[in-house]
Image (tube, rainbow, N blue to C red; front, side):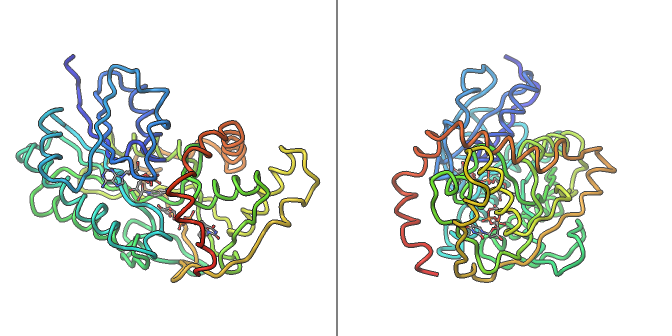
Length: 352
Ligand code: NAD
Ligand code: DAU
């Protein structure tokens, strides 16, 4: 088939990548979507069971740090565009061991940029969309919002690796004219998120009546966005965003961790028919994350005014859908949290 675009989506078997792929394969049957993923502990083809039969979808297992292999992938599939999500994504893991983050997030990204540059040979009729994070901007005090012009100030090994990758993306634009776009998004939540991240971890532990580890005093603030809305923002930026520009994506939705955990406890007590207040008793304050960023909050006015994007649902609606998904997909959680994951987390809280 003569596809209009042949898009390489990296990290498509992960949390956000699987939502991006689901959106793209359905909305754009005229595009070929090539999902390239190493299938680390965070990547799971179960996440894409519902689309794997579609004729415009392909899966390739591989590592973005492998230069000759990636060059071949660009050739084999005649790649016209890239949406780059593959990364090591968990801050706590980056604190324990930064090297995997340097390799995948920095070296892997530069490798992809080189492949795109070689393949597209100076032609501007392509897009390299780099999916990044608001954590590159550092940590806010009580007031203010991250804007696209906020100076970079990464503080964790994870955010330092993502900031570095953003700088390389911009460097390839300024130096070689590679047609790049960047997006920097706040905290995502929704179905298929690996249960090491706050919301799915709490849902899973509430369900199993296990302790709910809140770092420090629970006063840190995050700005939460439903993952499907992040995928729609990526779609809009990929198609309509300006080349060489960054777009912040967020939900205007700030919550302290403790308030969020309280909300989840009460919601799940209701859904599970438990006594009111039962799950809040599971909350356990544990040693704080090292260098824990205090507050993230996004000014998303650029993507709204330039591209007309806003989130489609409220946090309460999104959490309701998310909790229901985890309650209805317990087998998914069990299968991905066995083995390596259990080993990794066995002594996690004692160590801090
Ligand atoms: P995730 O950890 O769920 O998925 C990452 C995917 O990348 C996995 O499928 C994994 O197998 C794959 N991968 C890892 N190393 C690879 C390698 N060397 N080669 C090929 N594939 C590899 O992550 P996520 O939460 O879906 O995040 C996706 C992207 O979005 C990341 O770049 C992250 O920095 C960014 N981001 C995430 C959030 C969030 O809240 N989760 C917010 C803003 C931006
Ligand atoms: O802001 C975007 C970023 O959001 C993404 O770039 C990252 O990939 C993603 O992991 C996320 O980073 P955070 O560190 O903010 O997310 P996490 O879910 O790990 O933690 C959210 C907050 O909850 C943070 O303040 C730490 C706290 N926390 C987390 C866990 C896992 C707890 O209090 N207890 C926990 O068990």
